[in-house]
Length: 423
Image 1 (spheres, rainbow, N blue to C red):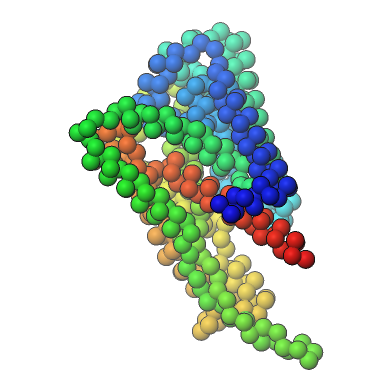
Image 2 (tube, rainbow, N blue to C red):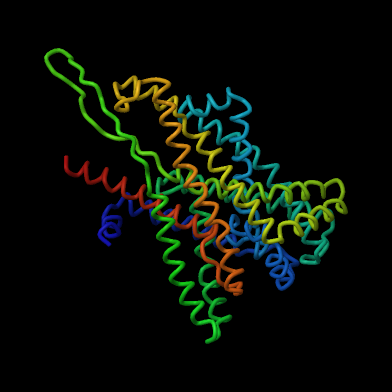
């Protein structure tokens, strides 16, 4: 409560928070504007029967469930970012530009990602409209109307990408993550109403267990997200002139969940990739596209197959993203240059090996935990038999991770302001 009061006491920080809320309101406003010719009941049935589109609905902030002009959400930009991340592994020069050129390298990386997102948004929009028309969810559109709607949907995705970048500039949290966060939170009232509609006195114990389990899962997610392995670091004493420096001891914090919620987002994007290929094929052959969509839907609607693939992808992408963003050799090099070392370990390659080994062990725990939480809704639905009860899952991980990250950024800004006011 004190932190909340401090936010509104600081004019600059208060303005930032209010502007972020305004932009999120703009996003929700546009997400409620549908494209014409929708059969709402058939749309809901189609989304409920397809888990992959349910995931995409999370990315779109609920825009897909209304077929709004922002129905693609931040999906195209996320897909473009994944493509760029993969390219950094294939092309070392791109990785060097991204990680060694600092802000300029990241700006170049983001600029290329935005350019890739444009054709991806157009292809996804065209594919979705064709797929939904084939399922009689929307009316079959004449060519000119179809192209017009594709243009509008693409513009909506780019406009949302722009909103995300504006929100990021306020340093209250990552703009894309906050957009997904807002979409998930906006769906909570409907989920609560659905749970009450399906309520009967016979399932009261189930609801009580569900509530307690939800609290435990949230606590576990927070605990793992904040958990870290501390590697002790000592600094050698150095004599400069008549003064002695160094000799201090500290630690190198290695987070258990080093990759955050990114592996979940990457895994969902890969799960959606076959559907995206089917949508792209619709440009050439609508019949082949429809057949491929039916096959993908049949495979991923099998709970066992879907859960195994999803768990595996989350674990793999946790290791992948950690390997891309965390370089033990670079950490070892920086420690050696600053006079730091791990007690009992030689500087250089030996230190890098110890850090790498520790990261691999902690990442394994984090990866298994993320994978388990991701498929937990399927487990709870299977055990309880109540579709409205979904403990854990992608939405919970994203909400908790984004909330924690935003809190940290706000607290860091409050700390800076307290420090400045003290002097």
